[in-house]
Each structure stands twice: as C-alpha cells, then as structure tokens.
Length: 390
Length: 218
Image (cartoon, rainbow over all chains, first blue to last red; front, side):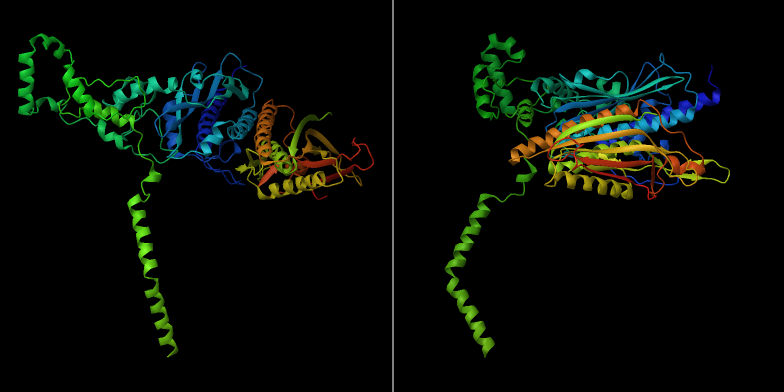
C-alpha cells in the first residue's frame, strides 16, 4: 500500500507541527513560571492537536531555524537540551529531550491520518505531564539571576547523554507508528545534581580564552549556534533570552579588545625603568638568554611577588610573574590583574546597600545625644501642653 | 467486555490524601478529555481546544497538570473530598479506595435506564499513616512526591499504548460516550466510586460505606 501524495503531505505537516509544539512545551515548562492556558470551544489557527499550547516567538523561530524546512528524518533526531548555569558561570546539562523517527519501523496499516493526529495530541499531553515531574522542573521553578538560570539549546543530532553524569535516567514518553516510520519521544535526565570541579574546570578555561576573539568566529560556536545574535556575552553558545534577565557581567569590559591590537607595544616605556633594565642587561650578560625566555631575575621576582596581593587559598600555587610579551611592564601586570579578577568572587548584591559600620556608629551617637537632651524635649512638650490649656 | 483496570497503592499522611488522589485522577482526565464538539448543519463537527494548568501541591513535593476547567476541577474535588473526609474520620481504619471509571452507555430502551459499560478503571488505594514530627513530614512529603512521579509516568505510558477507546459518536449519540455537562471540556463519560474499610478489616464487613454517584445528573 502506498501513501497518496496528499496523505504524505499531511503526515509531514503533522510531524513538523508535533516537533514545533514539543519544543514549545519543553522550553515553556522550564521558564520557572506556572502555566495556565484556556480551553476554547472554537479552535484557532495556531491550536494544533486540539491543545492550547502558546507559542513563544523566540522558541518557534529557533526550532524552525534548526529544522531548516526539513522534517525529522531517521538519522538525525531533534533534541532540546536543558542546562543549568550558575551565577559563577558553572554549567551543567540537566536533561535532553529527543524526538526521533525510525523509518525501519513503519506501520502501513495506520492509514487514517485522523488517528495519527489524535495520537500526536495524546503524546503532547503526556509530554506536558512529564515535564512537570522530572527533577529539572523543580530546579527551574527556583531559578533566579543571583543563583542560577536554566538555558536551552535546540539542535539536530544524537543526544549528548554523556553530559548527564553517572546514573542518568531515561523515560520513554511514547511512540506513534505511522506509514512513514515510528516517532519516538523520550527524555534522558541527570539524577546527580552536584557540580564537581572536574566537570566545569577544563571547559571553562577554554571558554575564557576564546573570549579574546569574536565569539561568532570560534569553531565551538559555529558548530551549534549559527544564528545572528548581536548580544555580547561570555561564551554565548547558549540562548538565554527566554528564561531570565540577562545579568550583565562587569568583567566583560576586561575582555574587550582594544581598537588597535597590541597597542601596548607601541607605547613609550617609562625612561627610568628602561634605563634600569638596560643596566641589568649590561651587568648580567650571562642572564640575557634567560631574560628573553620570560624569566625575570630573582630580585625582580621577589619584589613583584610582594606587590601582588594573593587572594588564593590554594597554598601550593605560586604566582610567577611572567614577563608576558605583549603586556605593559608596570608593576601590576595585566596577567596578575586578570588572575585576581577571576580569583575574587563578585560582591553579592545583598551587601551593596548594607549600611557601613560608620553609619551605625552615627546612629548610636545620635541616640545618645537625644537621650541626653531628654529634659529639653520634655520641657517643650510641657510648654506646648500649657499653651494649649491657656 | 472487560474493562482495563489499573490499581495504585499509596501510603500517605491524612492531609496528603486529597492531593495524592487528585494528581492521579487529573493526569488521567487530562488525557481522556477532548475539546468541546461543535456540530455543523451538514453533520460534520469541529473539536475545540483543551487548555491546561499547573497545580502545585501544598503537602506533597509535586506539581501536576490538569485541564483548565474550573467546573471539572470542582466536580473532582468535591468527590475526592467526601472520600478523604470519611477516610480520615474516626470510624475508619484509615484504609480505603477510590476509583475513576470511564464508561459508555448503551442506548436506553423504553422504560429502562441506559446500560453503563465500563471500559477503563483507575483505582487508588490509600493507607493513612500518622507522623510525629516535622522531620518525618518533610521526608514523607518528598517520598510521596517521588511515588506519584512514578505513577504519573506510568499513566502516560498506558495512554500511549493506544488501546481501546469508544468510537467517535454521531451527534445524537454524543451523550452516550462523552460527558457534555461541562462548558469548556468534553471528557469521556466517567464516575467516581469509593469505599472505606471498616475498623475490623475487609471491605465486605457490614460497616462498609459505598457510594456510587454518576457525575451526570440522570
């Protein structure tokens, strides 16, 4: 039995809208809000599968961009990856939702497209129910710019289940047999919620480095994120817009490349220092090769170490003040400054508005003066009372 | 015809009873409800849209989804509330069960009530426990949440097996398949039954209270 062109066209259309609605349900369930949509007696144009799923324009555009006019084929499933990003920049993949089509298993007997349409509706209802009970839902309801935000990524390809840590779980939400193949919807999710240093450390150090260049040009970014996002942020491979207020990071300014690259090179060095360096060169000719390798003399090293305030609690780490080829040679070298910026956590918002101890002192002083002037106040009140009686 | 039957057994604290039952029944009803049918003159019909709403439980660590129909929600809540009050009352043993039964009606013949044929039954058996302190309550709150998560996943699994459902009726027979009394949604015909076990045990003992009520006012 062969499908008529009309039937094939309808099936493709249903599959496309199933994919579009799946991403909407998944992403909206991770917004952190309670969702409520109305029942309608008359179906409107966007109400597919007799289910009122509102469309977020961002998510719709992103899904369409990823699908790129194709329907889900047998080789490449459509995935929605949900991850958590802490305010410190640590990141952890929480779950991966996967909609796939197995062309080998098709059911030519399910001829009636109407039945398939209804089953897709049931599958979406199940998806709605399950998004609320897997662990990431509770996390998403607790998200906030000060603690962590939930991000999503939509892509075509095999789900990256190795990012979900040990003992991840999988739930099959359902499958629908159609004449063109079997549609499968499943979710794999993390069960261990601790962020371990090994998990984040290496990846982050790469991301920092890549920020010196245009984020759009990095190969990592190119692979997954091809859209024209104009916003500037640290390693912007994740779309953040839909979930939370983007917290502008102050540190960003550190990474903006000056208009003229390596402009530091052309700056005139302070003459005194230059002279001193010449002296060192003249006196220690035998150390010359060492100098050029970036090693300073011992004296220099100790003085510079003293000038650096180390915030690190890591005792076995020794800060070696390297002579970086393109950095300025002033005492607080760029490298040291850069390192310190990343060592200290940014101050919490909570303490910004807090009164300084100085202000508190003033209040106690004021209270004392008020107390000492108590008699005077009493006199005023008494005189007022008397004048009222009179 | 034999009806499909699913039984869930749960041990909960008294105040969790309503929410535990509601989370299971609403998940089932969400899957078993369609949009309202509107018939045109030519005999064809269009199906409305079902909206949904998230419900946060107060005494269980759980959020579930139900149809956003206040009248359906009221009907279910009233029934569950009657059950839970008796279950928690002093006479009972703290054990009981409530079931959500889907049925279809055979057209009524003269003088006879229409015959009801169940096709799917969801039963929740509850056993109440008493907890001594807040620490235990917190543990129970999470534990029951996890148990209900498993039940909800199981319900979706059953729903996606695509087993028997009554056929779509013609306009004149709509009432034999669907509950048309709600203004916003159209679930398959259903009723709620419950029974409470007496202090001496089994449900066959004389003190058993059984109440069968159709949600349709006949």
